Amino acid sequence: MSTTTSPGLNLSGRLGAGAARDEAASVPRKVRWGRPRLYTKYSKDQAIWNTPAKLWWTVGLIVLAVLAPFFLSRDLTVLLSLACVYAIGGIGLNLLTGYAGQVSLGHAFFVGVGAYTAAVFGGDATGRVWGLGWDMALWLPLAAIVPAIIGFLVAPLAARVRGLYLATLTLALLMLGDHLFREWRAVTGGSGVGRAPANLTLFGVDLSTSYRIGGYVLTQQVTVYFICLVLLIVLAVAARNIARSRIGRSFAAVRDRDIAAEVMGIGLQRTKTLAFVLSSAYAGICGALLAVVVGRISADRWNLLLSIDFLAIVLIGGMATISGSLIGACFVVLLPRVIDEFSHLIPFLSASGVTGGGLTVDEFKAIVFGLLIVLFIIVEPRGLFGLWMRIRNYFKAWPFSR
Image (cartoon, rainbow, N blue to C red):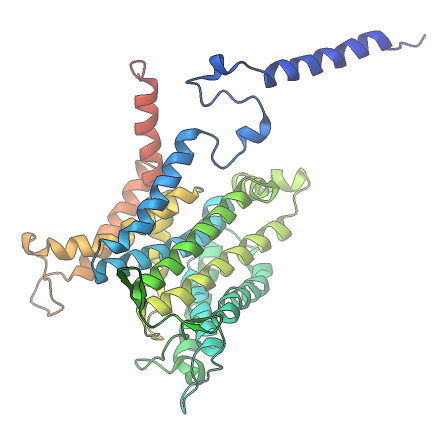
């Protein structure tokens, strides 16, 4: 005796499902008013700005960032440029560590590779270092491609280990790179000497000079800031799209339970390799821009302390969130300036670098970063972004917050 499904029942089931979808898609505006999270389509639920508040906050912050250099001093504009550059590097490390769960202490190595790639292809040749003097439209993509290729070559080794072993492997890569940067003088200029960064020429236009727009003089610092800001916006949106795509879901699956992800058909080798390649490309762009902002490339700069700075951006700002990388970068870059401004109020802190029994600003900054990393890991694993989410949810659910 065989059992068959009634065509009428199947048809009615399909009609019922279709009617339910149509009904959900045609929720009256009066019902949806004041309920921004009442999604009627999956596309709206997965959108980057899935609420009006997120869209208006983003537009407002971009407008504020564009207007900021016209009201700030030159040194504060440079600090904002550094914050944008560090945010790009933090987003790259967050893709690898926050989303894919691959701990890396060698991020500074890829940042240095990007800086020297840009300097070789875009800098001037002297009797001591190489330089091709190419346009920014060429050396900036190469600053991402070359570290990405190195990340692709390192990824098969890194994909075989995880946890503490992966951190040790990336730390060994950082030490190897530190030795290479010090000894390859034709590229780096040598330890303690360094070399000039890439030339700031875009499509034949020299951006290192000042330009007058209306009644305002656009200096080199402001021009560099706008370049860093535009690249940050583009790369942040790209990373957010990656995070909410199938690739990002693969990263999260490998991070949470790699064996279960492999059972479900996710290739561990392919996923981890892609995470390393993307992270290395972001780090390369960060290094190229960092060299332009700082103005001089030293082989002593790309060390473990720089990797810790990027790790602090991810942990303090918030893991597995692009907004957290932006918050963490601003915190890491602006904190030393705040400490320096109030150093005279701290009795054991020496504002100058002269050793007089007290701590210097850099030493105190390292101690603060270490304490904050431990504090956020224990108290708030999602960092400052998680703290903001707690505050927002509290007021959103008030008076039923508890």
